[in-house]
Length: 479
Image (cartoon, rainbow, N blue to C red; front, side):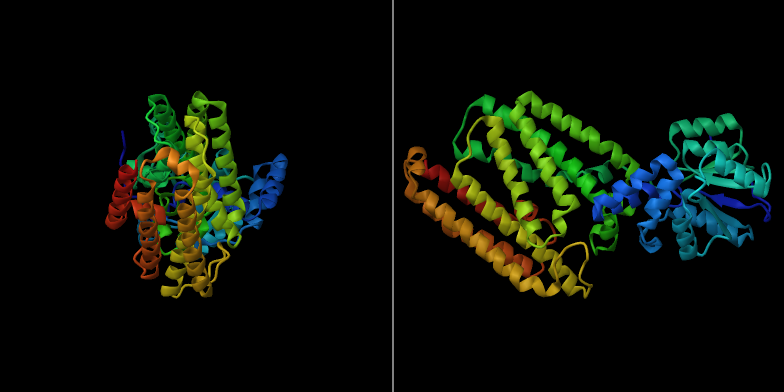
């Protein structure tokens, strides 16, 4: 039950919490992820301060991050409440357990607060500590408080009235037991659609590569297809955990990106704490499914995650190394299909996959750099590419695509083909089809008509889907 707060005297201060309230994210988690993404050694050094208390940890992390309040997502309902209080002549204060360096920068940016109470290197301003400070400053029942967390119950206990932002059920029950008049602010909550976007469900199409070894070997064994299907599910879960982690590390960069700023974590539609809970849950589910297939499958999943971690923390900022890493992440999916089905991958298949996916990764980087060039944006510090690298990226993409076609041509003439196909000569028709499809992907990117990952784009594109159908018909005719 919500008890509506009566209009307040203009002299009564309104005190607003920061994390989860004014901003729908946890600043400490975001800042730690930002430090870890830039330099994991600095992140470990900051964690080393935890033995001195949480306030020391927050101080260490704050010193490693330049405040960027303009990039943070702010809750419009809370901002509206603050503006209404100011228009009524009431003083408004920001009181937060975040470090004072960040809190003061946010207050200066918004220019809506008469004062700031925040954590220092000596005092962690949370729960009882915050309640004591506010009572000492404004008196018992001498302020209204806006919060969202169970820790805020100890503050609401001493407030005249409360406003709860996206409160969990236990917080609502706690407020009702306190007997303090309160309102629930109608704020946007994360929904199924937000989670589907954060987990990148649309990217699951990439994991269909797991079935390639079975198709290449013309397997019809139900047990092999069942094992590959289980591996598909495990890879989807593992990939989603990796996407969430990558988004946590890239929050600052995503918020400055012309399109990625709308990602659920970047815009605050999903909280950083919720993402931190989801990551290990997804990993455990992926590990449980893969180990049901075989220990080798668990090893492949582990290798994929290690490569993903290396990419997220280091490799993605290294020129061309990131492209090779992306190609390997695609190729690992083919290896995963082999591990699940027990079909050993041929050297031809692995070589072809590596060149094709290197081409796709280069087109992906080309698209990103072209976007910055067209919008006259500065070179990003998050990737080691400049706008004048565009021609080189296109050249490398064309070269690796050509190499993929060459590998396929050699495969057609290999002894392995005669064992699998009765009319292998027909497979030569796939070579010009590959030239067309890979060349078209590069041309579409050059014309600025590609806005997604090239592999996902290819699966959505009508002409590419038609090309896949034609290729499948050629293979069936060659059997």
